[in-house]
Image (tube, rainbow, N blue to C red; front, side, top):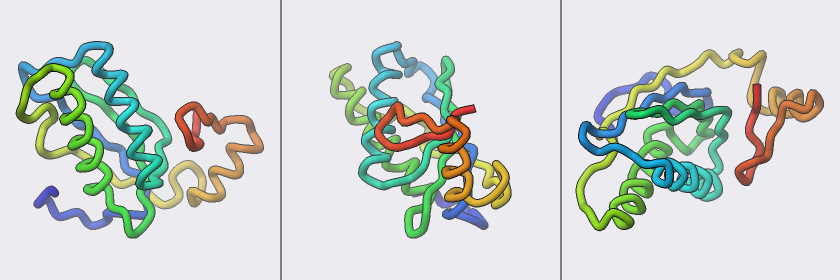
Length: 139
């Protein structure tokens, strides 16, 4: 768990950036594995995921952890499970992702209101995508 002190850790949308450690590049299959880990962690913990993108050495995502779940617990869960699965397939050990992550808590009114209202508005407008296993908002 991060020692970084955050003013807000739950009940907000968080824009998160996480880097792959130098010299630990991910293949396309490993990015797919990371996406599967995120899906499994969402099923287990119940956080919302609005959007994500994987780039060459890092990734970005928008998470909404509802209390008592925290953004630190979400990221720890994802990074731990992804590292174990990818290292197992590579027959390697050690860290894969940076120990810390960067986040920015969004205002409560981001996306025009609270998460429940945004989700129901997205359902009515057809912007809700259920591609993983629980709904995500699409732009």
